[in-house]
Image (tube, rainbow over all chains, first blue to last red; front, side, top):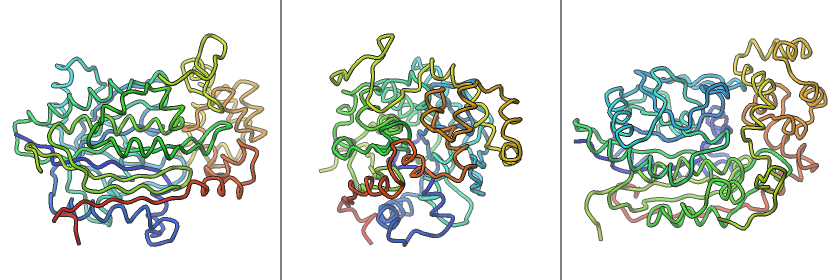
Length: 284
Length: 135
């Protein structure tokens, strides 16, 4: 059987990709954010997960408003990032894990979720930036990808509770996969930010800290707010916390925070990176 | 549920300074957003830059959407159903980053907008005691 060794939660601001492309990791503006990945790099080197199951939202690379799935699960042999309109396309392809993708699809449908199934899909900066942050450099990615897209663009969005339940169903599916795979789960996006409207630039440190404080020990605390509450609290893009809520749901064991880094601002965003471990047994 | 901050027409929940991109907005904004989605392709970005009016014709933008694009009026684009994720691709063509967009929408200078973001400036880091993550 497969097991989930932990979760990585990180902002995916496109500007981070630009900073990587320009090698600005040690620049005073960027360094406090990139430094949050020191513990993540060491942990990944020690754990060497076989697969990354990534909860993210597409911002208009693969999905347009003509067909907007609430939940979509990739089942492709390989995924690519492409130009999203500003000329940056990361070159390294992301190898897929089709058997695990189909197993997750079958199991979540069994759990009465109804995802769109995608044998061909592009992944945007919400997958590409976290992969670049976690595995920097030019070496081909060896951790395989199962992308799970959640609609955070067009309302009505799925409720936080629904996203959390989806995450739990995905977690159960991974644990029942009859192959000895070590899996890391990702939740990308957030934290508070708002790009548009008269409230552009909105940041809510209190709400972000509430999320960071409760993510590991009490994720259900985050479910007390509905989607529009979160828009009001965290901003219209801060609602990407739905991806974190889903990913946290997949961690069903004994969960402990290994590292957390909150840095404001990166671009217009309150940025954060959190590493959680997931163990089957309770650890003192 | 948070306390509701007011009600717009149709009983929708109003969030200050925020346009919730719902079905009504998605329907009204379809042509503008479709045009912006096409800008993922560099050739389409060039075609727009070469002849904006012809490019807007091709996607059937409404008069309000055309006027907003001509005037580079981001709030008007939002009011005409534009979604910021798609508008960001147009902003790229116009050489505007998200701080520029923020300044345009709030009526602040870009420096003041950046300074307002920096007002929240902070870094808070926790690292657990674990052999796998200690140097």
